[in-house]
Image 1: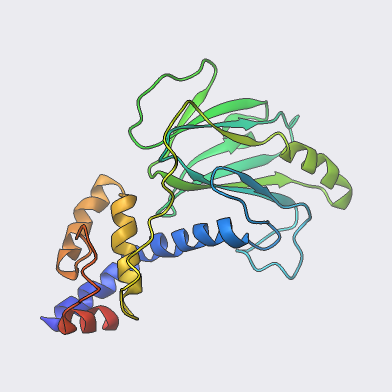
Image 2: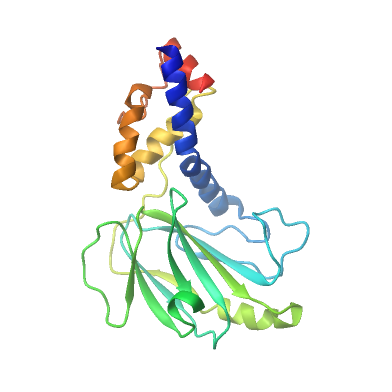
Length: 244
């Protein structure tokens, strides 16, 4: 049985790693920023103001685009995204859910380069949509918007920085205060913190229906429990989780 639990724990680790790592990075971004991007709270854009150099260590960066990134939290209601007219200049806003799935794009390839507004909504939201506004439904209430602006070099930077000022997120209507990312139970012992984060965050940010069915396999590991089972974890289960 312990070997079966260890194998199941290994599967859960591989399955849950994108969610756990990504939301850890989302939290870190709001607190510390990322590379040349300064920190920004949820629902605000952070803008790079220089081209990337060899010291940058955030993903595989290039230095012919300039980044603008926002961490979005729609748990309090929809957000209105405004984009400027780039007059044909290439740009892209990549939308990434909590599980790291890319689910939408705004920019020259997908929506053109004219000024526009997009209503960003939480999962299964129902409500009125302003005329002339396109809807982008988030699969999870927290997600990332990763923007890149084409830049021809240092002399072109002022034009890009001016475009960045036209990129904005604003609450739509009087919603509740965003909830953010739940804080996992701090009492989970060393070696089980990953599983506690996975348990907590998978409940807060459910994946697709197909993945929900897959997650039921992990019930023997305590990952479906509404409260943390890891604060007083049976030794056999703790050993299997750690080995997994």
